[in-house]
Image 1 (tube, one colour):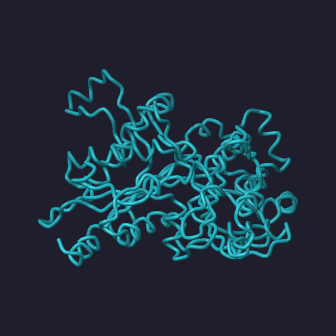
Image 2 (image 1 turned 90 degrees about the vertical axis):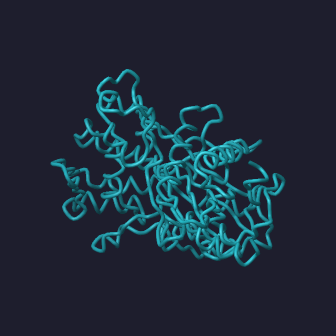
Image 3 (image 1 turned 180 degrees about the vertical axis):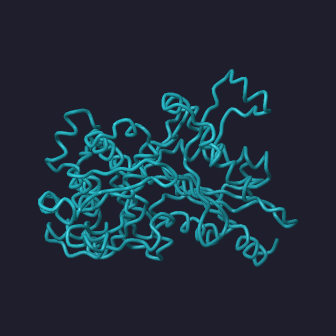
Length: 426
């Protein structure tokens, strides 16, 4: 192929993969990616009924998972979410099986029948704090899948925050990418400044945890153990408070105005927090300031406290406020660069996609406003923006990178960039 035909081919077959803790976003160029949950169900051995009807597979991913879920105890035992805090353990065999299977699922369901198709140019986005072995494992998985499917012409990996910056076309900025498992604060000056990255072991999972406690306190303990149910409730009743103490005060004075009530579609299940509706503000606050004194009672009774991040000799508290963590990350960069990093703070990730009911806008706010309030309390004048599509920003950046990375640029372990290519590496 000559250079122009390579460009034309990639415009047709560029492909993105965003390995989020909760969801896997994937697919070739389109308005939006395809999405499945980042989980897999291992079918119990010895299930005779399944064998009778001809089902021999061991692992199920995608929408089909819901068809195999049985009791809550069985789901807890056989349902695997491979990524916790954005990382897969090196020796976690079942987790890596799930990662391979969701990757296969993506390729099998999007692989075209076109005669000119020789494989996708794939860019994968993973946590900025991912260890080297995760790169190695993903290279191996894609090489193995190419041998089976002929669907991977070239493959590369970039940190999720860089993908966001690329999608926003801003390469001097601070990206705060928050998903289900972790929050990555990444100063970027043409490329992530690795020594300045602050990774917090908290994200949507912490909002889920406080939601589960609220459900228990409100009489829904029988449902609080089902992760997907808790997540749906969180997304529909949770609010970010402008000021938590003031929001709680107002909600207790007028509970009907702030009432949190939600009926689960397709079921008869209805959640109504009633007099506890002020608690809906805790769901949003725990992302931004889990150190607030109101959370101490929840930690003392068993709700996990966000784990500290240890990097070399540095230990960052898991409950540090998000504003303080952003300041910490930027303070690690050259003072000449800091003003530019403060002037472009970009928020991305599903954990920032919070709605604000118009009638409660005096007490609730969106994620960008909350971060600006926290930074202003430190005397910092900042510009904060939420990406137009926070859930899909990483995937979109991966697509752009698949199109832009020169075809002749092969993977370099020192720079951690380039193509891992068929015919060269596998």
